[in-house]
Length: 109
Length: 109
DNA sequence: GAAAATAGTAAGTTGACACTTACGTAAGTG
DNA sequence: CACTTACGTAAGTGTCAACTTACTATTTTC
Image (cartoon, rainbow over all chains, first blue to last red; front, side, top):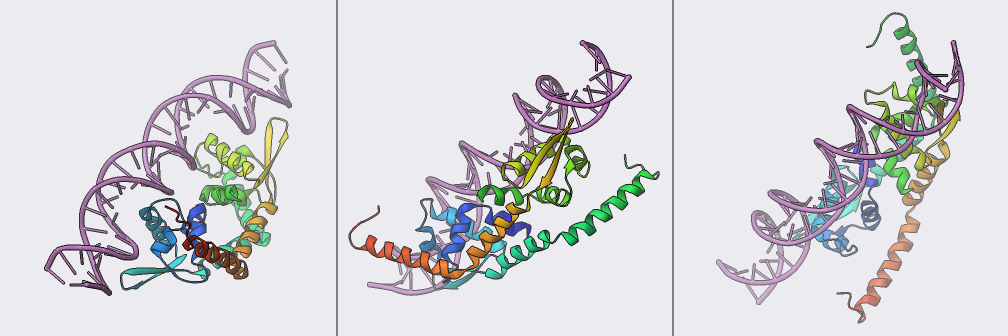
């Protein structure tokens, strides 16, 4: 999740994700859409791959990339979980309790 | 949107968001939850505020922060828009057209 | 109005990261 | 088997971001 959020925080990587969302595309074709060098895109693709946002498939000398929508679905789920304030209330209650205990003699520093 | 994504890519800022999700809290109380210095949290709060993820309200000498769920809602909406591949298809079609025109004589480099 | 409480700002340091050029690698092609 | 094609990796560079310590600013309190 951490890796996914960091990955999509970068505009160029979001753009790459868009490019390979519907159809898989070779790295070169992806790179052709940008004004940075090919190695730069190669590195972005690695970040996306490590985050699970794209898959890589080799075909001859080419490498075909495709988005993995499930990974973005995780982000959506995460945000919805974040959103759901029943969970927040639970968390806050726990923290309140913890602080109460801290005041009752267990000095922390 | 850009700012929001960058802001929530940082774990500590997500944690801050959680802390002020239900109730507004003074900066000091927020900082007390972390093992970094108060100025560091102050700077995180600024990032969150600039991204529209929290609001600031001054009360006496304290500054009370509260999450602005609408901002996260924007992210959700963005992701859902991203998700919706009908839009992707439109975008891809436009790009295809652009490439076709490029081949018809307008060399790019 | 001096002192305390609560907080942000300034300036410097460190590490991460997005890039570059140069090189390495692996599969097709004459 | 040299050569090309398509791509990644290595190594170096500049910038930005998260942190620190020191300082400043703004209330409230006595």
